[in-house]
Amino acid sequence: MPRSIWNGMVSFGLVSIPVRLYPATSSQDIAFNELHTTCHSRLKRIRWCPIDKIEVPSDQVVKGYEYTKGQYVEMSDADFESLPIPSKHTVEVASFVDAKEIDPVFYDSTYVLEPDEAGKKPFALFMHALKSKNMVAVAHITIRKKEQLCALRPEKGNLMLETLYYANEIRVDLEKELPEVKITEAEEKMAEALVDLLVGHFDAKEHKDAYREALMQVIEQKLEGKQVVSAPTPEATKVTDLMEALRASVEAAKKRRAS
Image 1 (tube, one colour):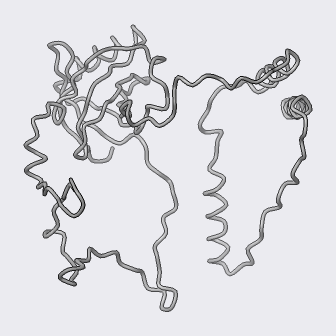
Image 2: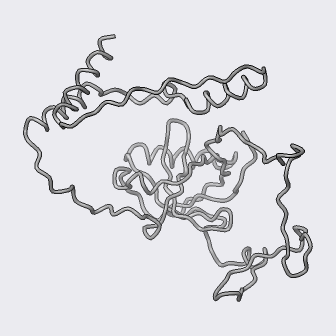
Image 3: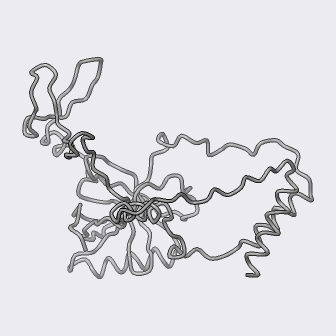
């Protein structure tokens, strides 16, 4: 388990559970450094003051909020720490809701909560209550100098904490109606048949990061001095009729399932 990024309490009613917060995911993106094309040395990103014409060390950097053009309010670490926000140290449950009520677009990042030794029993009790009622807990937590809405949900033996976007951060219209277009009964049935043929169970292990694998293959080929080859491009299929496209998709799905 990596180092915890937040220590505090989960509070619901009069029950408080000492917990530690850990990242639940780790990006597997391939990292690249920027090199100078002439000498191939690694480039540095520096903090440059255009007035003093010098590089600025980190201990001389302060955060500033631009309230009008060129005018700033400076904020120190002490200012952030002194904010009277309970969620800096306590995840206080505001309500319990059905998980289906939270649209997936609201989910941001996933973390996992682990109890301290003294909190194992109330932690287990909290998990049991969520599972038995099939609910998630809605609360707030402050991490990385930002208070975020969050949802706590049980996942087997883990208590997951999902940070959520606030309503004013969602850019899509969740109340939008379907476009008014005429759909025939035959088209509806064909689309439904295609869905039925592709019904399955989600298993993340079945899905691979094809882009990453191809990128690593190119890198390895360059290391070995081999000629890099291009993958063949699939021929484009010209489709002019919706029913024709649905029918072709159903036939293709049938062949894949049979094989």
